Image: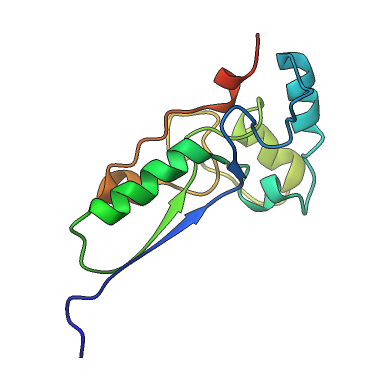
Length: 140
């Protein structure tokens, strides 16, 4: 029996390359156009909806993998890896009302745009701190 087995499973949500948020392509030059294209992803079945409106910048995802490899954790662990904000400009409560109108929603944090899938475990156990938000990558 292997007693010192160390297994971590990281689940990145809607991986976005640096400088290219989900649903935003290289021809998207300004914030208005980016918000319009991201808004078009707001429907049941879209990857951003299925992933709890979450996304992860590739650089922050790499940070999570590095932290997991360097950790001293023992035993199996599963971590959701996402940015602290959603891929939308609207508040999460408003998104839930639009997409899941019959499901009650109570936020876990003070962040009005926190994704529906919690990254608390990754923050607490790995020290994960995503810093690359899609809004910062778009010309204002």
